[in-house]
Length: 640
Image (cartoon, rainbow, N blue to C red; front, side, top):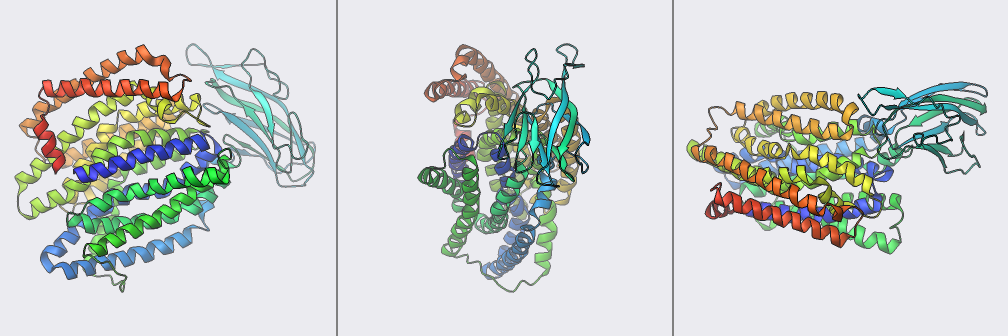
């Protein structure tokens, strides 16, 4: 496990450097929302295929083929499935590219206009009513009709939640033309891209639009008003909660990144071949190549071309990096297979009984093992209705992915072939012991990590990402999301540990049904919590669904997984040591909390180092003193 965990750790560290550069250049607005949404599709397939789900179906079948029919037949099976995957996904990519606008309409519906008026002519009016809770801006744009169309916001009012009781208290200032600021409660109006000479509260054709900039941390819930067309005909007024250019940019960037989806499925296939024969190095190192390509693009191409101050250009560079990295990773795995005497070739795509069995197992396996990513995708759909929320959730996701990647994914990759081999040898006791030790290692690492992210999220986010276009307000919002995700971190990792207990028995249907229940829970919780807590509600909904999935998986393994006495005695000690560490972190953070507020990076880094190493010292001392683990147990566990 040390090989997989080590390369994954390198990938996560380089990934942090990558994301620090991305948020520095893109910020947390239109371009970052567009890029992160465009990256979500291929990144989802990287995590679902590349981090275990495809292997959950392929590895047991390939291992059986090796054992029963020998290496030549096994390689023929692998080559045939590789060919079928390449043809199917290649065709899917070509079909998906021209349909990308339709696909993105389903994935990021909030990027499109929140309200579109009927066709209007001079003298016509349109009443608008928008939910602005959590919004940073509202945009007005005229589209269609005559080129000389011109309109005006006649009147508007903002309503907000009362300070007491959480009730709606309307600010009945009804500010004429939304231009004044009375009592500091009404937003300023800015007009962007005034290429047609429009001014004030007017909106014209030719690309002009009007932006209502809402104050940070505002409590407004609705913007209502009337818009009047002063000249022109056949024109539509569109109002947006996100920048009007966000959707079109998302579609363009996704068309660039979409090929990465195909590459990741093929990379996962080749990784499964290598993992089955206990070659873990290159499959674990493949994600490192993605981050290396990103760093070359962001550290070399962007400065050389002079694009540091151009977020849109940087967004295109990042998308091209995704495209290039996919083929670099695929080439590296393909060459490694040949060098290790496991050549995979394109052959006639015949559908044999074993191939049918693979695809029958693969569908449910992908759904169940990729449940966390499905939940994040659902969260992204809901988050698109709040400007900046996609960026907040992506950035916080990157932080908790570090322990998840180092431990959860590594355990999932290693446990599946380990349990499969033991069950093939009728060693049920050995399989149970492997599961118990996996749970123990997972919680030993993730309990303290979760508590740290829960009690000091702002110092972590501010130090890692707050620079350039990523401001302090974005750090605050990202930190809140990180705290919501943190509660579910042990659950996310336990899912990775428990699923191999099903997959090793070629049972992918049970986890799929459980995943369906989990998705339903996530959707319901997201819809209930988002109107109240905005993007933080999405993070909490994902956490709730993760623990529901853990409960269902654990219950379904009754009779196969038996918690041994060692695990029962050590879990309370691990939890107590984690809580003790959390209390120390809270105390330390109160002493140095000023170091993280609009301070120099060196001061922030010093403060975070104090918190991290202080927490590690307290936790390490506590778990050893409480005998929650021993050094020999740690060495033995990671050596596997």
